[in-house]
Each structure stands twice: as structure tokens, then as C-alpha cells.
Length: 284
Image 1 (cartoon, one colour):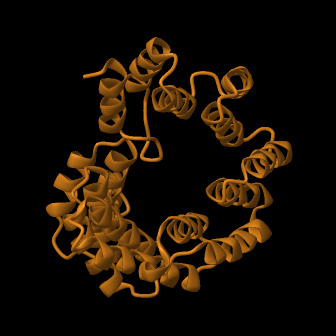
Image 2 (image 1 turned 180 degrees about the horizontal axis):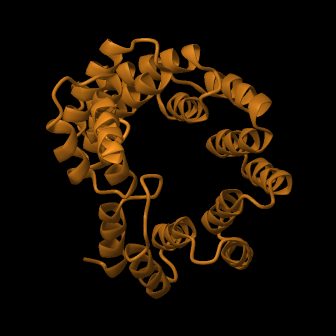
């Protein structure tokens, strides 16, 4: 009898309650089941800021960028000082700029920049927001708030927080300035500083391939495979490089097929993106 009473009390207090709808949705999102996450989240009653943000992320991952923008705006309205929500809103505006008409793209791009800048102002340690703002400055023309001088200034900020990442972004800037030897040197410095970070080795391998240095690129890819055997990111990056450079297409197709049966996370390129790359590799 005592056990029954104790169990009843615990149930009433919520201590034995199952995972919340948000927690269930987060697990589905992490397993790349974005449709499943949306189904759970949309059934929730009163949605708080983090629920709207996860809705936005799920829509973003299935390329529903207008719906993602709307959800992130709800998240930011509920929690306007949250740098992560502003960063994601900037990403959504950025994607809309990429896929919209030439008439709307400038407005969307400017909104993306403003969100990235606000996110960095709120949290200057947010590495992803810093990286996206750097990419914006690097790619956007001056009349949209971009420019190499802004990118260079931000690269110095990034380098003070993460030296290896600083070398990487400075390599990107050097490449855009057609300082190809300098770009390669910066990438090699990143590898030397963080030799166990497979992403640094992949960056160098992809760049060497782009420059036509095939043997050196293959040696770097082999090093990446040794560091992280069967790692989905390694499989995808190798295939992406081969398809981009029009070589080893048979191998690229094999790598992508292996990638598609891997257990992916939300940090990996989507299966849809991999399938599109596979179609490109097959000439379909």
C-alpha cells in the first residue's frame, strides 16, 4: 500500500512523467527526422521561444525557408536577446536570398547580415555566428554591407578565439584575393595547429584538389580517413570534392552510397543533399 501511495505522489508531482514533447522532437531532430519533429512540435499547445526555434530549424533542414523565417521570428520575439535564435533567423534569411528573385534577394541578404551582426554583438563567442558573418562579408558586395576589409577584421577576431579557425578563414580570404600560395600556407598552419581535427585535413585536401595538386590531395584525404575511419563527414567531403573537380566519379558514387546508409546527425549534410550530389556524379 505504501508503494502505491508513493507512486501516486510521484506521478502527481511529475517526477515519473515521460519526456516532454519538446524533448521527443529534439531527439527526432538530432536523428534527422525533421518531419517527425515538426509533427510533434506542431501539436504542442503554448509554444515558447525554444519550441519556435526548433520548429524553425526543422523547416530550415527541409528547405522550407519561408516557414523557417516565420518560426524564428516568433522565437526572437519571445526571446530577443538570444544570440542563437538571431543567428538561425539570419541563416533563414540568407537561404531565402539565395533562392529568391533578383528583386527580393538584396533585401533578404541585408536582413541576414543584420541578424548575424546582432547575434555576434550579443554573443561574441558564438563560433557559428562569427563564421556565417565572415562568409557574408566575404561574399556580399559592398552595397549590401560586405567587403574584404570587414572580412579581414572579423578574421582577426576569430583568430583570437580559435587560432586554427583563424587560419582557415584567412585562407578563404587569401583565396578570394587570388593569393593562392598564401591560402595554402594558412590551411597548412591550421593542420599543424590542430592535427587531430579531421576537418582541418579535409579543408587542405579539398583545396589542393582545387589547385590541381591531385597526389597531395589524395595523401591528405588518406590521412583524414586514417584519423576518422568511415566518418560520414569524410565520406561526403571526399565525394563532394571529386564531383566538383570532375575526377574519381566512380569512387565518388561509392562514397555517397556509403554515406547514405550512415547514421547521420543534424550536423551532417542531409540525405537529400547527398542524393542530389549522387545524381550529379552519375550525370542524371
